Every structure is written in C-alpha cells, then in structure tokens.
Image 1: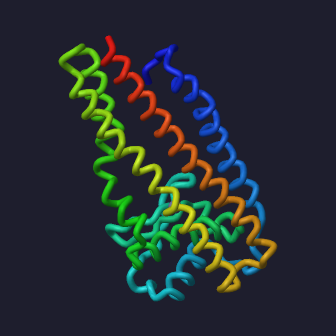
Image 2: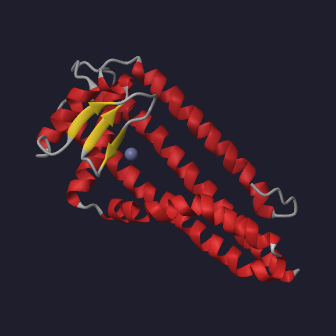
Length: 233
Ligand SMILES: [Zn+2]
C-alpha cells in the first residue's frame, strides 16, 4: 500500500511480507511431500472426516462434500458442510488425513460454541469492511488534508477489526489442529510415526495464519504512524 520511505513500519513490512511468502511456499511444499506418504490404515480424507464426525456425534448434522481447488478445504458453519479438496477428499495420505481432521476440528468447535470461533464469526463482517472500506476512508481522509482527520480515524478503527480477526484466527486454527491430531491418533487412523507427517502439514498451515496476523499488525502500525504525521503537518 502506501510507500512512505520515512515510515519505519514500511521497512518492517518487507521482512513480514517475505515471511508470509515463505510460509505459503512451505505449506505447499509440506503438503506435497506428505501427500506422497500413504497412511497404513488406507482411509481417505473423506472417510476419516466421517469417522470422526460419527465419533463426536455429528454424523447426522455435518455433511462431507468434495470441492474444487487446491488446499480449498474448509468448514462452512452456516450450512454445516465440510468441503474437502480433491487431493484431500479421495486421498489416503497422511497429509489428506491431517487436513480433513483439521476441518472436522472446526465443526467440533462450532458444536461446542468454542469462544474464539464464535468471536471470529462475529468479527467477519467488520473485518471484510476494514480491509477495503477502511483503507479507502483512510486515503480519502488523508487527501482532504486538515479536515479529513476524522475519516482517517474511522478508517483506522475499521482496520482494527481486520487485526482482531487475524489474531482471533490463531487460537481457532491451533485448537482445530490439536483436535485433529488427537482424533486421528485416538481412532487409530494413523500410527504415531505417520502422525508426525500430518502434524508437519498442519504446523506449516498454522504459520500462514501467523504471517497474516503479523502483516495486519504492521499495516495498522503504518496507518497509525501516518495519521500522527498528518496531524503534525
Ligand atoms: Zn482451519
């Protein structure tokens, strides 16, 4: 976004951006690696998801469906549908089992009304506004000069919603992965050795969320500093 060379947070955004790129690369590479490692149980991602759902009493509540795309797996809390990408749905790799079980983790959080997930779902609309309208208001406010200060403040306030969303996502994701690994092992779908592969994939995915939160925080700091500079003009 704004290229303000004198803004120290602009320089900080460069390593944070590189970290985010690296995390994306790492999740792709780790997923590819463990997609080649078959689980001895021979269970596919979809079957694993259904078994866990059955075990936690959600078999009749949550549906499991295939969805197009790469790493597009997600749990849809509104429609109670767990959507798995082709490489997860019908694969019996330790990577597929890890991702499928992780998405079931979100379904279990939904059932238990897990605090961070409830909070995250509440913030979603604000976060959506903050990343687009928040920035626009900020730019317009800054262009207006002395009279636009309040627009910049409003933009910053909306952007705080983005930061809150990325931060509350962290416990939600870590918890879903912890639940996934417990279920996979508890139900004997992977051996302790295979579990390491599933865990590596989920840890790599977690890093991308850490990077997203770091990027949002640095961007917020940039906005705040620019607001202060604007005030002093
Ligand atoms: Zn997740």
